[in-house]
Image (tube, rainbow, N blue to C red):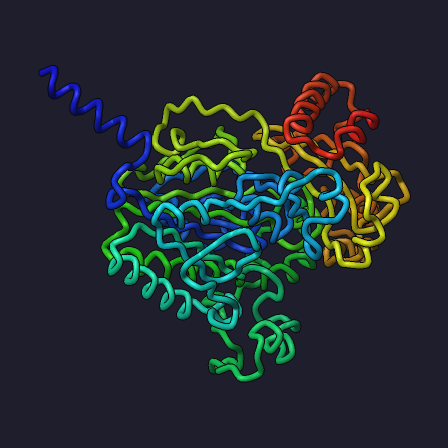
Length: 513
Protein backbone atom coordinates (compact mmCIF):
# COMPACT_ATOMS: atom_id res chain seq x y z
CA UNK A 1 0.00 0.00 0.00
CA UNK A 2 2.83 2.37 0.89
CA UNK A 3 4.62 1.56 -2.37
CA UNK A 4 1.46 2.32 -4.35
CA UNK A 5 1.07 5.71 -2.63
CA UNK A 6 4.69 6.58 -3.33
CA UNK A 7 4.22 5.68 -7.01
CA UNK A 8 1.13 7.88 -7.29
CA UNK A 9 2.94 10.74 -5.54
CA UNK A 10 5.91 10.48 -7.90
CA UNK A 11 3.63 10.58 -10.95
CA UNK A 12 1.87 13.66 -9.63
CA UNK A 13 5.18 15.40 -9.01
CA UNK A 14 6.33 14.51 -12.51
CA UNK A 15 3.21 16.04 -14.01
CA UNK A 16 3.63 19.27 -12.03
CA UNK A 17 7.36 19.84 -12.37
CA UNK A 18 7.73 19.21 -16.07
CA UNK A 19 9.23 16.35 -18.03
CA UNK A 20 12.80 15.09 -17.61
CA UNK A 21 12.55 12.59 -20.49
CA UNK A 22 12.69 14.37 -23.86
CA UNK A 23 10.23 11.95 -25.45
CA UNK A 24 7.67 12.82 -22.76
CA UNK A 25 7.99 16.57 -23.01
CA UNK A 26 4.90 18.30 -24.39
CA UNK A 27 4.73 19.88 -27.80
CA UNK A 28 3.71 23.54 -28.05
CA UNK A 29 1.75 25.43 -30.70
CA UNK A 30 1.47 29.12 -29.88
CA UNK A 31 -1.09 30.84 -32.12
CA UNK A 32 -1.49 34.59 -32.28
CA UNK A 33 -3.94 36.82 -34.12
CA UNK A 34 -3.05 40.31 -35.35
CA UNK A 35 -5.23 43.24 -34.18
CA UNK A 36 -8.04 41.16 -32.66
CA UNK A 37 -10.36 42.71 -30.08
CA UNK A 38 -10.90 40.54 -26.98
CA UNK A 39 -14.67 40.44 -27.52
CA UNK A 40 -14.54 39.39 -31.18
CA UNK A 41 -14.91 35.66 -30.43
CA UNK A 42 -18.08 33.70 -29.97
CA UNK A 43 -16.65 32.01 -26.87
CA UNK A 44 -16.19 35.50 -25.35
CA UNK A 45 -19.83 36.33 -25.85
CA UNK A 46 -19.92 37.85 -29.33
CA UNK A 47 -23.32 36.90 -30.81
CA UNK A 48 -22.44 37.36 -34.51
CA UNK A 49 -23.45 34.12 -36.21
CA UNK A 50 -20.70 31.84 -37.51
CA UNK A 51 -17.91 34.19 -36.47
CA UNK A 52 -15.29 31.92 -34.84
CA UNK A 53 -16.46 28.27 -34.80
CA UNK A 54 -12.95 26.77 -34.64
CA UNK A 55 -11.75 28.88 -31.73
CA UNK A 56 -15.07 28.35 -29.94
CA UNK A 57 -14.51 24.59 -30.28
CA UNK A 58 -10.93 24.95 -29.02
CA UNK A 59 -12.21 26.85 -25.98
CA UNK A 60 -14.78 24.16 -25.17
CA UNK A 61 -12.10 21.46 -25.53
CA UNK A 62 -9.81 23.10 -22.98
CA UNK A 63 -9.39 26.18 -20.82
CA UNK A 64 -10.28 29.79 -21.48
CA UNK A 65 -8.77 32.49 -19.26
CA UNK A 66 -11.00 35.48 -19.83
CA UNK A 67 -8.67 38.19 -18.52
CA UNK A 68 -5.25 38.06 -20.10
CA UNK A 69 -3.54 41.37 -20.90
CA UNK A 70 -0.74 41.99 -23.35
CA UNK A 71 2.27 44.08 -22.35
CA UNK A 72 1.95 46.78 -25.01
CA UNK A 73 -0.56 47.43 -27.82
CA UNK A 74 1.98 47.50 -30.66
CA UNK A 75 2.73 44.45 -32.80
CA UNK A 76 6.51 43.90 -32.62
CA UNK A 77 6.99 44.95 -28.98
CA UNK A 78 3.94 42.92 -27.91
CA UNK A 79 5.33 39.77 -29.52
CA UNK A 80 8.81 40.41 -28.13
CA UNK A 81 7.32 40.70 -24.63
CA UNK A 82 5.42 37.45 -25.25
CA UNK A 83 8.58 35.53 -26.23
CA UNK A 84 10.99 37.07 -23.71
CA UNK A 85 8.70 37.55 -20.71
CA UNK A 86 9.94 41.13 -20.42
CA UNK A 87 8.04 44.41 -20.70
CA UNK A 88 9.15 46.78 -23.50
CA UNK A 89 10.96 49.24 -21.23
CA UNK A 90 12.99 46.39 -19.69
CA UNK A 91 13.87 44.74 -23.01
CA UNK A 92 14.36 47.98 -24.99
CA UNK A 93 11.99 46.80 -27.73
CA UNK A 94 9.42 49.58 -27.34
CA UNK A 95 8.03 50.36 -30.80
CA UNK A 96 8.77 50.23 -34.49
CA UNK A 97 11.95 51.53 -36.12
CA UNK A 98 15.29 51.83 -34.29
CA UNK A 99 15.25 49.26 -31.48
CA UNK A 100 16.32 49.82 -28.79
CA UNK A 101 16.55 53.62 -28.86
CA UNK A 102 19.94 55.22 -28.28
CA UNK A 103 18.78 56.93 -25.08
CA UNK A 104 17.69 53.58 -23.64
CA UNK A 105 21.13 52.04 -24.17
CA UNK A 106 22.82 55.09 -22.64
CA UNK A 107 20.49 54.76 -19.68
CA UNK A 108 22.04 51.35 -18.94
CA UNK A 109 19.61 49.07 -20.77
CA UNK A 110 20.70 45.68 -22.10
CA UNK A 111 18.91 44.05 -25.01
CA UNK A 112 17.81 40.45 -24.20
CA UNK A 113 19.60 37.57 -25.92
CA UNK A 114 17.29 34.83 -24.69
CA UNK A 115 13.66 34.01 -25.45
CA UNK A 116 11.46 31.00 -24.87
CA UNK A 117 12.18 29.89 -28.45
CA UNK A 118 15.96 30.11 -28.12
CA UNK A 119 15.91 28.15 -24.85
CA UNK A 120 13.58 25.45 -26.17
CA UNK A 121 15.78 25.15 -29.25
CA UNK A 122 18.86 24.65 -27.05
CA UNK A 123 17.05 21.99 -25.05
CA UNK A 124 16.31 19.85 -28.11
CA UNK A 125 12.99 21.17 -29.38
CA UNK A 126 12.31 21.53 -33.09
CA UNK A 127 11.32 25.21 -33.27
CA UNK A 128 9.49 26.80 -36.18
CA UNK A 129 7.38 29.77 -37.15
CA UNK A 130 4.77 30.39 -39.80
CA UNK A 131 3.16 33.73 -40.60
CA UNK A 132 3.90 37.04 -38.96
CA UNK A 133 7.25 37.30 -37.20
CA UNK A 134 7.34 40.68 -35.46
CA UNK A 135 10.48 40.25 -33.36
CA UNK A 136 14.21 39.77 -33.88
CA UNK A 137 15.05 38.05 -30.59
CA UNK A 138 13.76 34.56 -31.44
CA UNK A 139 15.70 31.70 -33.02
CA UNK A 140 14.11 28.95 -35.07
CA UNK A 141 15.59 26.02 -36.95
CA UNK A 142 12.59 25.83 -39.26
CA UNK A 143 13.02 28.90 -41.47
CA UNK A 144 10.58 31.74 -40.93
CA UNK A 145 7.69 31.36 -43.35
CA UNK A 146 6.93 34.94 -44.38
CA UNK A 147 3.90 36.60 -45.95
CA UNK A 148 4.87 35.58 -49.46
CA UNK A 149 4.78 31.92 -48.48
CA UNK A 150 1.51 32.28 -46.58
CA UNK A 151 -0.39 34.48 -49.02
CA UNK A 152 0.30 37.66 -47.05
CA UNK A 153 -0.58 35.78 -43.85
CA UNK A 154 -4.15 35.18 -45.02
CA UNK A 155 -4.15 31.87 -46.92
CA UNK A 156 -5.40 28.94 -44.86
CA UNK A 157 -4.17 26.49 -47.50
CA UNK A 158 -0.57 27.69 -47.13
CA UNK A 159 -0.70 27.57 -43.34
CA UNK A 160 -2.08 24.04 -43.34
CA UNK A 161 0.57 22.83 -45.79
CA UNK A 162 3.38 24.34 -43.70
CA UNK A 163 2.05 22.89 -40.45
CA UNK A 164 1.62 19.43 -42.01
CA UNK A 165 5.24 19.41 -43.21
CA UNK A 166 6.54 20.77 -39.90
CA UNK A 167 4.73 18.12 -37.85
CA UNK A 168 5.99 15.39 -40.18
CA UNK A 169 9.56 16.62 -39.65
CA UNK A 170 9.13 16.60 -35.87
CA UNK A 171 7.80 13.04 -36.00
CA UNK A 172 10.61 11.89 -38.31
CA UNK A 173 13.31 13.41 -36.10
CA UNK A 174 11.55 12.20 -32.93
CA UNK A 175 11.72 15.64 -31.35
CA UNK A 176 9.25 17.59 -29.26
CA UNK A 177 8.28 20.71 -31.17
CA UNK A 178 7.45 24.36 -30.62
CA UNK A 179 5.59 26.13 -33.42
CA UNK A 180 4.61 29.78 -33.49
CA UNK A 181 1.70 30.16 -35.92
CA UNK A 182 0.69 33.77 -36.47
CA UNK A 183 -2.16 34.94 -38.67
CA UNK A 184 -2.10 38.40 -40.23
CA UNK A 185 -5.90 38.68 -40.02
CA UNK A 186 -7.73 40.73 -38.89
CA UNK A 187 -5.04 43.40 -39.50
CA UNK A 188 -5.66 46.11 -42.10
CA UNK A 189 -6.40 46.03 -44.91
CA UNK A 190 -9.60 44.19 -44.20
CA UNK A 191 -11.19 41.82 -46.76
CA UNK A 192 -12.84 43.43 -49.80
CA UNK A 193 -11.72 46.92 -48.75
CA UNK A 194 -10.39 49.59 -51.12
CA UNK A 195 -6.92 49.09 -49.67
CA UNK A 196 -6.73 45.64 -51.19
CA UNK A 197 -5.11 46.55 -54.50
CA UNK A 198 -2.28 45.35 -56.75
CA UNK A 199 0.27 47.72 -55.27
CA UNK A 200 -0.47 46.52 -51.74
CA UNK A 201 -0.41 42.87 -52.81
CA UNK A 202 3.01 43.31 -54.45
CA UNK A 203 4.34 45.05 -51.38
CA UNK A 204 3.06 42.38 -49.01
CA UNK A 205 4.11 39.46 -51.19
CA UNK A 206 7.50 41.11 -51.78
CA UNK A 207 7.24 40.28 -55.47
CA UNK A 208 5.04 41.06 -58.48
CA UNK A 209 5.21 37.44 -59.61
CA UNK A 210 2.55 35.81 -57.45
CA UNK A 211 -0.26 33.43 -58.34
CA UNK A 212 -3.77 34.80 -57.89
CA UNK A 213 -6.90 33.02 -56.76
CA UNK A 214 -10.12 33.46 -58.74
CA UNK A 215 -10.80 36.63 -56.73
CA UNK A 216 -7.60 38.17 -58.16
CA UNK A 217 -5.86 38.14 -54.78
CA UNK A 218 -2.96 36.06 -53.43
CA UNK A 219 -5.30 34.57 -50.82
CA UNK A 220 -8.97 33.49 -50.58
CA UNK A 221 -11.76 35.74 -49.37
CA UNK A 222 -13.42 34.91 -46.01
CA UNK A 223 -16.32 32.49 -45.84
CA UNK A 224 -18.53 35.27 -44.47
CA UNK A 225 -19.76 38.58 -45.83
CA UNK A 226 -21.49 40.27 -42.92
CA UNK A 227 -24.06 43.04 -43.14
CA UNK A 228 -23.97 46.13 -40.89
CA UNK A 229 -27.14 45.14 -39.05
CA UNK A 230 -25.47 41.86 -37.98
CA UNK A 231 -22.51 43.60 -36.36
CA UNK A 232 -22.04 44.02 -32.59
CA UNK A 233 -19.31 46.57 -31.87
CA UNK A 234 -17.10 46.73 -28.75
CA UNK A 235 -18.53 48.97 -26.02
CA UNK A 236 -15.87 51.62 -26.73
CA UNK A 237 -17.75 52.63 -29.86
CA UNK A 238 -21.26 53.95 -30.59
CA UNK A 239 -24.12 51.62 -31.37
CA UNK A 240 -24.43 53.42 -34.67
CA UNK A 241 -25.04 51.93 -38.13
CA UNK A 242 -22.45 54.29 -39.63
CA UNK A 243 -19.74 52.71 -37.47
CA UNK A 244 -21.03 49.20 -38.11
CA UNK A 245 -20.74 49.74 -41.86
CA UNK A 246 -17.03 50.41 -41.40
CA UNK A 247 -16.50 47.38 -39.16
CA UNK A 248 -18.23 44.68 -41.22
CA UNK A 249 -15.00 43.96 -43.11
CA UNK A 250 -13.08 43.63 -39.84
CA UNK A 251 -15.37 40.83 -38.73
CA UNK A 252 -14.97 39.09 -42.08
CA UNK A 253 -11.22 39.19 -41.36
CA UNK A 254 -11.89 37.65 -37.94
CA UNK A 255 -13.72 34.80 -39.64
CA UNK A 256 -10.83 34.16 -42.05
CA UNK A 257 -8.43 34.15 -39.09
CA UNK A 258 -10.57 31.47 -37.49
CA UNK A 259 -10.53 29.44 -40.71
CA UNK A 260 -6.70 29.50 -40.72
CA UNK A 261 -6.61 28.33 -37.10
CA UNK A 262 -9.11 25.59 -37.87
CA UNK A 263 -6.76 24.26 -40.54
CA UNK A 264 -3.81 24.29 -38.12
CA UNK A 265 -5.77 22.34 -35.51
CA UNK A 266 -6.99 19.86 -38.15
CA UNK A 267 -3.41 19.08 -39.18
CA UNK A 268 -2.43 18.61 -35.55
CA UNK A 269 -5.35 16.26 -34.87
CA UNK A 270 -4.56 14.20 -37.98
CA UNK A 271 -0.89 13.94 -37.01
CA UNK A 272 -1.72 11.81 -33.99
CA UNK A 273 0.24 14.15 -31.68
CA UNK A 274 -2.62 16.29 -30.36
CA UNK A 275 -2.95 14.58 -26.98
CA UNK A 276 0.43 15.78 -25.68
CA UNK A 277 0.40 19.12 -27.51
CA UNK A 278 -0.42 22.32 -25.66
CA UNK A 279 -2.11 24.75 -28.03
CA UNK A 280 -2.27 28.36 -26.86
CA UNK A 281 -4.16 31.18 -28.55
CA UNK A 282 -4.15 34.93 -27.91
CA UNK A 283 -4.12 38.26 -29.75
CA UNK A 284 -1.20 40.69 -29.90
CA UNK A 285 -3.57 43.61 -29.04
CA UNK A 286 -6.97 45.11 -29.85
CA UNK A 287 -8.57 46.05 -33.16
CA UNK A 288 -7.00 48.93 -35.15
CA UNK A 289 -9.34 51.67 -34.02
CA UNK A 290 -8.74 54.39 -31.42
CA UNK A 291 -9.39 53.08 -27.90
CA UNK A 292 -8.16 49.71 -29.21
CA UNK A 293 -4.77 49.24 -30.83
CA UNK A 294 -2.16 51.72 -29.44
CA UNK A 295 -4.33 52.25 -26.32
CA UNK A 296 -3.99 50.84 -22.81
CA UNK A 297 -7.68 50.37 -22.09
CA UNK A 298 -9.01 46.78 -22.03
CA UNK A 299 -10.12 47.26 -25.66
CA UNK A 300 -6.44 47.64 -26.53
CA UNK A 301 -4.70 45.33 -24.08
CA UNK A 302 -7.13 42.57 -23.12
CA UNK A 303 -7.15 39.25 -24.94
CA UNK A 304 -8.80 35.90 -24.30
CA UNK A 305 -6.21 33.21 -23.57
CA UNK A 306 -7.26 29.81 -24.87
CA UNK A 307 -5.35 26.64 -23.87
CA UNK A 308 -6.01 23.12 -25.17
CA UNK A 309 -3.95 20.20 -23.88
CA UNK A 310 -5.95 16.93 -23.73
CA UNK A 311 -3.31 15.12 -21.63
CA UNK A 312 -3.38 17.74 -18.86
CA UNK A 313 -6.23 20.24 -19.15
CA UNK A 314 -9.83 19.19 -18.56
CA UNK A 315 -12.27 20.39 -21.26
CA UNK A 316 -14.84 23.07 -20.57
CA UNK A 317 -12.85 25.01 -17.96
CA UNK A 318 -13.35 28.75 -17.70
CA UNK A 319 -11.36 31.13 -15.50
CA UNK A 320 -13.38 34.32 -15.04
CA UNK A 321 -11.47 35.89 -12.15
CA UNK A 322 -7.80 35.08 -12.77
CA UNK A 323 -5.58 37.87 -14.14
CA UNK A 324 -2.74 36.81 -16.44
CA UNK A 325 -0.18 38.93 -18.29
CA UNK A 326 1.35 37.96 -21.62
CA UNK A 327 4.80 38.20 -19.97
CA UNK A 328 3.73 35.19 -17.87
CA UNK A 329 3.55 32.90 -20.89
CA UNK A 330 7.31 32.42 -21.46
CA UNK A 331 7.97 31.43 -17.81
CA UNK A 332 4.94 29.14 -17.93
CA UNK A 333 6.18 27.34 -21.04
CA UNK A 334 9.64 27.00 -19.49
CA UNK A 335 8.14 25.21 -16.48
CA UNK A 336 5.78 23.05 -18.50
CA UNK A 337 8.55 21.97 -20.90
CA UNK A 338 11.00 21.24 -18.10
CA UNK A 339 13.72 23.76 -19.00
CA UNK A 340 15.55 26.25 -16.82
CA UNK A 341 13.62 29.43 -16.14
CA UNK A 342 14.65 32.42 -18.25
CA UNK A 343 16.42 34.91 -16.00
CA UNK A 344 15.29 38.53 -15.58
CA UNK A 345 11.72 38.00 -16.78
CA UNK A 346 8.95 40.30 -15.58
CA UNK A 347 6.44 37.47 -15.62
CA UNK A 348 5.84 34.35 -13.54
CA UNK A 349 4.65 30.86 -14.36
CA UNK A 350 0.94 30.09 -14.16
CA UNK A 351 1.40 26.38 -14.97
CA UNK A 352 -0.46 25.48 -11.81
CA UNK A 353 -3.43 27.64 -12.84
CA UNK A 354 -3.51 25.94 -16.26
CA UNK A 355 -3.61 22.46 -14.72
CA UNK A 356 -5.58 23.03 -11.51
CA UNK A 357 -9.00 24.57 -10.97
CA UNK A 358 -8.21 25.39 -7.33
CA UNK A 359 -4.93 27.13 -8.05
CA UNK A 360 -3.47 29.70 -5.64
CA UNK A 361 -2.54 32.00 -8.54
CA UNK A 362 -2.82 35.61 -7.36
CA UNK A 363 -2.11 38.46 -9.75
CA UNK A 364 -4.08 41.56 -8.73
CA UNK A 365 -3.41 43.71 -11.80
CA UNK A 366 -1.85 43.28 -15.22
CA UNK A 367 0.67 45.98 -16.14
CA UNK A 368 0.79 47.40 -19.68
CA UNK A 369 2.86 50.18 -21.21
CA UNK A 370 3.11 52.45 -24.21
CA UNK A 371 6.21 54.46 -25.13
CA UNK A 372 6.07 55.31 -28.83
CA UNK A 373 4.77 53.96 -32.08
CA UNK A 374 7.80 54.76 -34.28
CA UNK A 375 11.42 55.60 -33.60
CA UNK A 376 13.05 56.21 -36.97
CA UNK A 377 16.68 57.34 -37.34
CA UNK A 378 16.00 61.11 -37.42
CA UNK A 379 13.88 60.85 -34.27
CA UNK A 380 16.48 58.68 -32.58
CA UNK A 381 19.16 61.27 -33.34
CA UNK A 382 16.84 64.06 -32.19
CA UNK A 383 16.67 62.57 -28.69
CA UNK A 384 19.95 60.73 -28.00
CA UNK A 385 19.53 61.19 -24.23
CA UNK A 386 16.54 60.40 -22.05
CA UNK A 387 14.92 63.30 -20.21
CA UNK A 388 11.65 63.65 -18.35
CA UNK A 389 10.40 66.05 -21.06
CA UNK A 390 11.17 63.66 -23.91
CA UNK A 391 7.53 63.73 -25.03
CA UNK A 392 7.93 67.44 -25.81
CA UNK A 393 10.97 66.82 -28.01
CA UNK A 394 9.39 64.25 -30.30
CA UNK A 395 5.72 63.75 -31.12
CA UNK A 396 6.24 59.99 -31.34
CA UNK A 397 7.12 59.57 -27.66
CA UNK A 398 3.89 59.37 -25.68
CA UNK A 399 4.57 57.54 -22.40
CA UNK A 400 1.55 55.84 -20.83
CA UNK A 401 1.21 53.14 -18.18
CA UNK A 402 -1.80 51.06 -17.17
CA UNK A 403 -3.09 48.59 -14.62
CA UNK A 404 -6.08 46.44 -15.56
CA UNK A 405 -8.05 43.75 -13.77
CA UNK A 406 -11.60 42.37 -13.83
CA UNK A 407 -13.09 45.48 -12.20
CA UNK A 408 -10.95 48.54 -12.94
CA UNK A 409 -8.88 50.04 -15.71
CA UNK A 410 -6.34 52.69 -14.70
CA UNK A 411 -4.31 54.63 -17.27
CA UNK A 412 -1.63 57.25 -16.67
CA UNK A 413 -0.67 59.44 -19.64
CA UNK A 414 2.61 61.15 -18.88
CA UNK A 415 2.35 63.30 -22.00
CA UNK A 416 -1.24 64.57 -21.65
CA UNK A 417 -0.62 68.22 -20.79
CA UNK A 418 -3.59 69.66 -22.72
CA UNK A 419 -1.51 70.66 -25.74
CA UNK A 420 0.28 67.49 -26.85
CA UNK A 421 -1.65 65.18 -29.17
CA UNK A 422 -1.23 61.59 -30.21
CA UNK A 423 0.70 61.19 -33.49
CA UNK A 424 -1.38 61.41 -36.66
CA UNK A 425 -0.42 57.81 -37.50
CA UNK A 426 -2.37 56.77 -34.42
CA UNK A 427 -5.50 58.53 -35.54
CA UNK A 428 -8.03 56.79 -37.71
CA UNK A 429 -11.58 56.00 -38.56
CA UNK A 430 -13.18 56.51 -35.14
CA UNK A 431 -12.47 60.21 -34.55
CA UNK A 432 -13.19 60.87 -38.24
CA UNK A 433 -16.56 59.12 -37.98
CA UNK A 434 -17.38 60.83 -34.69
CA UNK A 435 -16.83 64.26 -36.19
CA UNK A 436 -18.53 63.35 -39.45
CA UNK A 437 -21.74 62.16 -37.78
CA UNK A 438 -21.79 64.55 -34.81
CA UNK A 439 -24.66 66.61 -36.23
CA UNK A 440 -26.85 63.52 -36.37
CA UNK A 441 -25.72 61.45 -33.38
CA UNK A 442 -27.62 58.16 -33.59
CA UNK A 443 -26.40 56.65 -30.32
CA UNK A 444 -27.90 58.96 -27.69
CA UNK A 445 -26.39 56.88 -24.86
CA UNK A 446 -22.86 57.53 -26.11
CA UNK A 447 -20.93 60.66 -25.02
CA UNK A 448 -21.09 63.71 -27.29
CA UNK A 449 -19.41 62.62 -30.53
CA UNK A 450 -17.30 65.77 -30.98
CA UNK A 451 -16.11 65.84 -27.37
CA UNK A 452 -15.25 62.17 -27.54
CA UNK A 453 -13.23 62.66 -30.73
CA UNK A 454 -11.26 65.43 -29.04
CA UNK A 455 -10.64 63.28 -25.96
CA UNK A 456 -9.22 60.51 -28.12
CA UNK A 457 -6.55 62.91 -29.40
CA UNK A 458 -5.60 64.65 -26.14
CA UNK A 459 -6.56 62.14 -23.42
CA UNK A 460 -6.21 63.02 -19.70
CA UNK A 461 -3.26 62.75 -17.29
CA UNK A 462 -5.06 60.10 -15.21
CA UNK A 463 -7.96 57.86 -16.13
CA UNK A 464 -9.91 55.43 -13.98
CA UNK A 465 -12.83 53.32 -15.16
CA UNK A 466 -15.17 50.88 -13.48
CA UNK A 467 -15.30 48.45 -16.38
CA UNK A 468 -18.10 46.39 -14.84
CA UNK A 469 -20.40 49.41 -15.01
CA UNK A 470 -18.62 51.09 -17.92
CA UNK A 471 -17.00 48.46 -20.22
CA UNK A 472 -16.40 51.05 -22.94
CA UNK A 473 -14.33 53.31 -20.66
CA UNK A 474 -16.49 56.34 -21.35
CA UNK A 475 -16.78 57.86 -17.86
CA UNK A 476 -13.45 58.84 -16.28
CA UNK A 477 -13.67 58.47 -12.48
CA UNK A 478 -10.18 59.74 -11.63
CA UNK A 479 -11.57 62.92 -10.05
CA UNK A 480 -14.65 61.30 -8.52
CA UNK A 481 -14.39 61.50 -4.68
CA UNK A 482 -16.30 58.23 -4.30
CA UNK A 483 -13.48 56.37 -6.05
CA UNK A 484 -10.62 58.15 -4.28
CA UNK A 485 -9.70 55.11 -2.09
CA UNK A 486 -9.56 52.91 -5.20
CA UNK A 487 -7.40 55.46 -7.00
CA UNK A 488 -4.95 55.73 -4.09
CA UNK A 489 -4.58 51.95 -3.87
CA UNK A 490 -3.94 51.62 -7.59
CA UNK A 491 -1.38 54.43 -7.50
CA UNK A 492 0.58 52.54 -4.82
CA UNK A 493 0.49 49.40 -6.96
CA UNK A 494 1.71 51.40 -9.95
CA UNK A 495 4.63 52.91 -8.06
CA UNK A 496 5.63 49.46 -6.83
CA UNK A 497 5.56 48.02 -10.37
CA UNK A 498 7.50 50.93 -11.83
CA UNK A 499 10.17 50.40 -9.19
CA UNK A 500 10.28 46.63 -9.68
CA UNK A 501 10.70 46.96 -13.44
CA UNK A 502 13.10 49.93 -13.18
CA UNK A 503 10.81 51.99 -15.37
CA UNK A 504 12.44 55.19 -16.69
CA UNK A 505 9.09 56.96 -16.20
CA UNK A 506 8.99 56.40 -12.43
CA UNK A 507 10.10 59.94 -11.59
CA UNK A 508 7.59 61.45 -13.98
CA UNK A 509 4.80 59.35 -12.53
CA UNK A 510 5.54 60.17 -8.89
CA UNK A 511 5.89 63.89 -9.64
CA UNK A 512 2.57 63.94 -11.50
CA UNK A 513 0.51 62.76 -8.54
